[in-house]
Image (cartoon, rainbow over all chains, first blue to last red; front, side):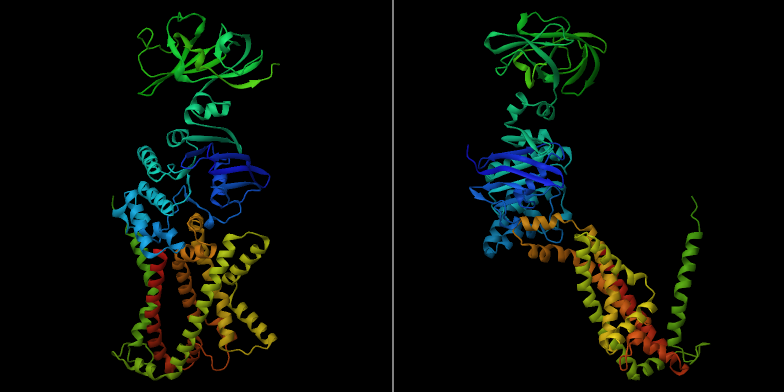
Length: 368
Length: 256
């Protein structure tokens, strides 16, 4: 892996609160990388340290091999797209974009061609003479991106770039950001609390919680093989069960007894090597619903429950089903009931089943 | 629904109450009668007399000089004070804040007396310098308050943005903060200017021989009825210029 942006054991406290706690990660050149987490997880503090607005208590930050930990913001090869865009209200769109080039005293001709080219890239050539206040939210954001990119930064930081936009515009800008990233090839670092945003924008995501990085992985891996229950719940929805290993089978399968679900579940997981208590996770859309017990032998995990609640979302339907002490969320893409061609009603008894490979062990606990 | 006539009536009454004296004064400045009891015909006479009254123009010049220099100084110091008050918090700043607001509420007569006491104690001769110092002290408070209000609305991520784009700390203040603060600074300066121009009480204490400002001159002219209509003429001119200044200041505040 090409270590272009390196965060090396960085810690930052505000008073007694550890905002960023010994975080290390590295980002490749040209990568689209996201820092994802709930508010207060330290992602914004980390971004501000990369930009130079905060100084780490300890640790180093390197860009392209250069240690920038103590450089002031104006000397860093890094530019930022701020959450509220922070456009200069007293300057025109054109002058906003030209600001960085003027600060670095580029020749007049270079400034002109640079700004024009950048405004063309974000399709704002027509709006060059307007003031930021005369633009729509999406246009303001594109100005903010152009203003940062015109300086040819080695790393572009984007702080909640879509948070201020409404839903329709957000989906449009999502595509736009991906296109811009492809065109300029700069390393993009997104900071966001929105998992959908992070998933569709980035090559890799660092999920942060309470100042620490929980997991760094591609969107697919985060979704399919979350390493902690925090990651599993933060990225998508999940059903959790606590169970005890009752049998280690061949080919890396284990049988796990979960209280209240009847027969033991079969799971595939290579990391389990002894009888122990563990926490496992199944995504709602991995669960199939049938009226009768499925007949596929012991390679299928099946258990019965009673439908408690139904929510119809158009593209899919969600069922909350009670089985023993568990409340299980199942999600069906079709509103028709796939097994018997009827939709289960509230109070109906149904069978839930999932393939052993769809269950994930997310947290191992020492057997009591 | 029928609209009530009461609000309109009250508005009208307030306007009459506020502006009737001014109307009488303006009218009298064109009244041929010396005492203004009744209308004796239109005249430019008092304006001619005013034109010839050299001591009035000399006073006006002194007043403008003081008002300009005092409000200009207050604009600079007040902006710096407001920035410090807004950006830094400590017990020292609480004292600072108190000191800045004190002249707003302190009776003028107290300020005048205490300033005079200070000048006497330190042996500074009263004159232009002392009036300027006195005016800066109270103008400062007003400028600071106006600029502080602007600063509270200022989005300091703009400074971060400027620095992110390669501006040094000083450049960021110069290119972003100052231009955005300028309307507030100017509005505060205008306010200070108008306050300085018509200050009587404080100036009375700290002025010296040869530094009779316009308000002091007018007060002394009031003692002789002979010059009363001339004062009317002068006041009319002052009212006109005040309206212009007030309108200007209002527009600046609105644009800001």
